[in-house]
Picture: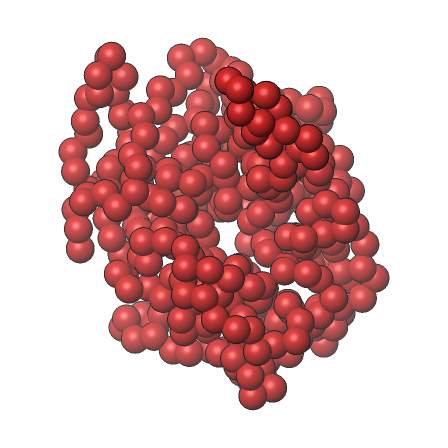
Length: 363
């Protein structure tokens, strides 16, 4: 285990206060200055109904930094820590909220992406590339393979995962981990479609949703009767779809809940006990159709400004925008944690941020 370095005071009087730095850092570590004012102006209320979820005297904190692409946070209440994937560095990191330390939990993590905690408190991980499988870490540390093939062919690149109260495991299987060399190793897909899968308690793997192009984040409604899934390459924009899920785990009634702007990027998300969707958000990298003259060069600039998009969008169960939590980095995924379940952890590019709210995760 690699212990985090001590807090470092930075030039200009900015301290990385509250930022446990991964050491040795294998990615950029950025300073962050928490807002001094209450309420934190970074929490933007888009609908008055969100006001009850904002804590007046709570501000955004940077609790860790030094990653290359942070993803898949999951909270373990028994140990009071968060695990977060650092995909390009091929490791899973651990933030201990009691010790305020940031350490390496697992090296050579097979480019782990999404993580979840099952109902027995065990880690379930989407190994995003190379092995291309879903695994469970047993209490003795042994790793059990839960799924790596469907109908005799290798999975694409398991991405995000959620565990239902009936102990079934649901995960998305897009192409990201095998599309290039950044989040794993380039490989040819064997599956004809990019699916959402269900692992039954008997171990049987079933393709539940087969008509989404690169499904990404997923989560259940509080009553688990609806499954929400992000479609990374939606039509025309990134979208969140809902599906009714019956007692046998079959999906029906596909309905679009959220349509991102043509430059917005929905990613991982969580649902609170009231059914609201807390979504990682940022620029999707789309370019303007015409170039802009910049110092004599014709540059194709981004649609929208990343600094205006990076953060967390909160939507009602019907898809109405309720709030935007502004962050200095693009948020890929998030989870609820803390001793009372009301601390929002946000995995954002190089860093892990936290904010106390008056909301609790549904799972």
